[in-house]
Amino acid sequence: MLVTLKEILKIAEEKKIAVGAFNTPNLESLLAILEAAEELQLPVIIQAAQCHEVFVPVSVIGPVMIARAKEASVPVCVHLDHGETLDYVQKVLDIGFTGVMFDGSTMPYEENVAHVKKAVEMAAKTGASVEAELGSMGRRESGAGDGAGDGDDTKIYTDPVQAKEFVKETGIDALACSFGTTHGIYLTEPRLDFSVVEQVRKETEGMPVVMHGGSGVSSEDFRKAVAAGVRKINYFTYMDKAAGTALAEYVAGVEEGMPVFFTEAALRAGAAMKENIKEAMKVFANIE
Picture 1 (spheres, rainbow, N blue to C red):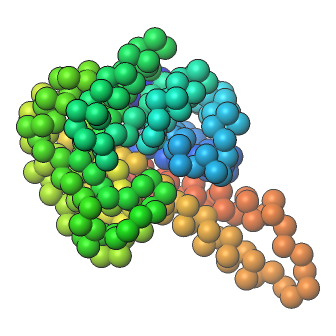
Picture 2 (picture 1 turned 120 degrees about the vertical axis):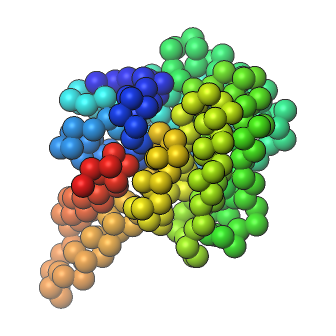
């Protein structure tokens, strides 16, 4: 069932849970995500990130995402993660995405506002919802960049008062906040400031907060984030790592002189991703 970001976040708010948002840089990840969501009967967000264009063009994976979302037995939002240009935002809207994120977090405030307002205008023409980011987690969605964990001095924590103005000026449907997370693999244990989430929610009168950079965060801290008001959690690095580990184990187990088959490797990688995704979704939805 294809729904918008706004619609799926309304479900999350009513249930006081966070909806998992998982990236789909290949068909195996897409199938794993949707199978996990259907087995648990939980709403889910499937995402294409602009920086993952090198793995699979959105023009190829996007229509497949839309088709599979329509066929799913649970609510599914097809979302753009970390859109870096308005041209790319328009590209996915033309494909039929029901949610888009324009990431202007590294821009000066006024420039970020101007670009996000334009994205909101563009999305309104197709009925799609918009997520934007205020503050910075210091690294790209791919995990690239300098520094990691608490040693990353490029982080800029979201100012709740500024968030109030940002939401009012732009008309967005969800706000990605920086409160101590970092994209990619953590080198040190993250120290999260949940009061940032609580204050943003208070200042913005309940705006759904999005948590990026969730890989490496403990189950306990995920639950605290949800209790504080996080309603969408982006999760990719560790599901990708689970697939890589399964692939490595398969290759290592092949007898010397015997062939390694990609199709078998892909099946094992997909199965490992699905189990990792299910565990994450259970935590986000507070399911034991």
